[in-house]
Image (tube, rainbow, N blue to C red; front, side, top):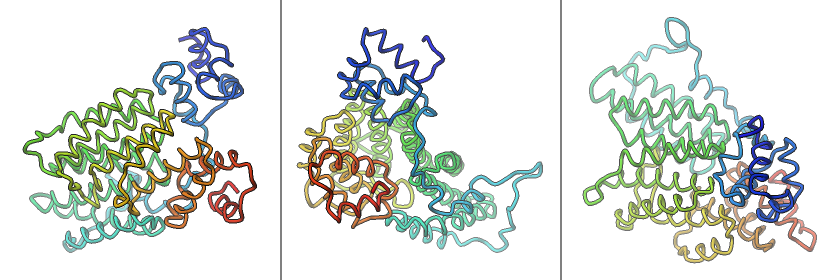
Length: 408
């Protein structure tokens, strides 16, 4: 392709190859002409903008940009919690004789106690207590590392390795949430290795699913889809005799692949992955597959929520709200998946210029989970869009919400 490979050059070449002016492309993509001019001039845009352009041009989103071209996140949160202890534990320095700081375990580590701590930390993570997670997770990782070193063979070593894999996967998920992506990749890579060493293929596959989320958050859409889809194919269970944990990990991988494909302007593939994920959910017989301090949870509700999210990615807010109306009220919960769903519903209202509804949902999310909402870039985008759609000034409460989100 002509040009130096930058996003602007790529966009210009694709546009000219289709005989489109900047104005015509902007019209097809539902954008302002100035956005096209900005990108072709070397500027950057949000991932949703690139997706709209890819849809208008009929190409994969990943063809338009290198992840480095994405704009920096001015609300990056790795400084909001103290990550230095995690950095020391996950990426320690090495010498010719090995790593630094590997102290003698002394007496045998208590694997049951380590498992209890892991369960408690999972509760803190799901409860959005990020400062507590950041404070205690390094200690859990140290304990699992010492346990693996102490139990050098047999069933106890395999159990120690499984605990290590789960702890590293929790670390990867937490670090992705606070956007410390490079460190998250290190943790998740080591989680895969620990799970494989334990002979636990499902735990390794679950860590790859978490890696898919990290790749999605970075905008590495081709890689996110390829890694999760390939792993799902490798572990595909025989439905008639599959265990719940096998169906759960397989379904999560497929859901992640669907999310990546939808964002990469591959709607048919996104539907295909989601159809298979629905097969896994149906095979569970209405029961969830759960491993709280590992890969968390999978069920039919989460497949349905992904279908709604995919409609939003395709810029179909009306369809998204129609699907959302079918979600039973009994499904409402304080889980991260449910909050993400409500944020998606808020986004749909904002796109349809229903500013009061959008801001009302944001206010409810802030009242329920202020720490979680503060880490959601989409919440800030929705607030800005809803504010632009309003004909009346913001209320005192709405201004306070904007201030809490950092966009007041």
